Image (cartoon, rainbow, N blue to C red; front, side, top):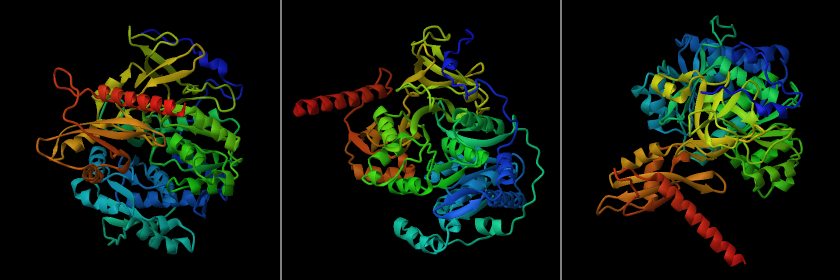
Amino acid sequence: METLNAKPWFKHYPAEIPQSVEYEVATLQSYLKKSAEKFPMKSALNFMGKEMTYTEVYEAALKLANQLKKLGVEKGDRVAIMLANTPQAVISYYGALFAGAIVVQTNPLYVEREIEHQMNDSGAKVMICLDLVYPRVARVQEKTKLEHVIVTGIKDYLPFPKNMIYPFIQKKNTGISVKLDYNERLHSFVKLIENGTIEEIDVHIDPKEDLALLQYTGGTTGPAKGVMLTHYNLVVNTQQCQLWMPKLNEAEEVVLAALPFFHVYGMTTVMNLSIRMGFKMIIMPKFEPKDILKAIEKHKATLYPGAPTMYIGLLNHPDITKHDLSSIKACISGSAPLPLEVQTSFEEKTKGRLVEGYGLTETSPVAAANLIWSSRKNGSIGIPWPDTDMAVLSVENADIAEPNEIGEIMIKGPQVMKGYWNRPEDTQATFKGEWLLTGDMGYMDEDGFFYIVDRKKDMIIAGGFNIYPREIEEVLYEHEDIQEACAIGVPDPYRGETVKAFIVLKEGRQVSEVELEEYCRKQLAAYKIPRIFEFRDELPKTMVGKILRRVLVEEEKSKLKKTAEETSKKVE
């Protein structure tokens, strides 16, 4: 394969951003230790009014690390974290790393089937979870290798009197009130921290070889698998993030932490970057536009990484004009394409900059972005970050494509994953030499800006979450009344896409959309549940019987186009 020599994107780099740097060969947890030494009394986070200094977060993480060691956690053991954005999520992440463990981030929305798969695939030894999700964990624990479960609640790190009131609000909103009978396998997070010690654990970690994280993703080749990210992968991407935003000031910025920490994008661009730079995180347990608007104004947030749905949610909120958002300096949008009208409107409202970036879980995650304070191209995912090579693999000759030629985008750089956990064949299929094959079709223009023209085959992105149709279809096929099923993504003005399922029922059977939705709710995380069902007598197929998903997608596009044309005629 032809060598990539020309890197036209460098001509756009401003003087403040280097083309290449020497990255720290360090562990992720060393960031927290250094910031605690450098900014001991500075606020590291604010959680609904509860403030914690860098020293307090650091010592809590050490206490947890020592308690994990007492529970038998050794270097390389996997510790699952199933938490919403809370102080406990930060403490657990760095605490597990101080213990020498590998973090397995687990989405709190997962249902039993998904939890069981991830725990068994990773071989996790300990789970740290919210009390609200504990019943789900408990129901599958005996089917996994989980030896210990550590439980905490939102109230545990709320200030008085919110900590007293919250359990009643939680029960009212969720209908769930969890009573815990602690024993030798079930532990209280708060009690462990209270009884923990702050000695550093002597564990040798090679940042370039040892894993910090197993981040589960659909990947580029099929079903969910664990992406192996080393300490060095994540340290590099955090530093690259810092380099890309040269106008940010150490220990001065206030970061709105609405992106979930269990997602690698929020983990790197919010949590790891903030801890490295001594920033203050305003932690939001869930995305509520009204609360976000209040938080930006109250705390004078300067940095707000997010997904397009988050910015759309704020722009469409009726109270947006009642809040001062002028403190915002920069926002990098990821997880899904950023509509131009959203970018323009958000910048008008805040006077800050909002640009689109691009990456994969396999790249820790960011590989490219538009320049925040320099040249950018609308509709583009931007240019590669320092020390990151990107190219397009020609469909014609398996060589580097010419400018504007569409092919598969490839990435090479120090933030690229080590591989997939226990899946050497999948790892091999995802690499072409040193290049990571993204599965995304796109092109590079003459200036070195990259564009995506199609996503990974069949993948649906709804609200920033990657959804693979195959998983939804497998659940639908298990329904006793369903003969055939096919799931696709259809445009949604808020979520980007939403899931639509085409159903062929068995002869003589009947089932309603409401019944199917209830059925899916028991089997799938909420964001994966089809929002639209269409019943058909048959689905389009190839000669050998394979369902033609693309035909269904094109049909939906045609419907939308026809509706838009009819609406336009009525307006005229």
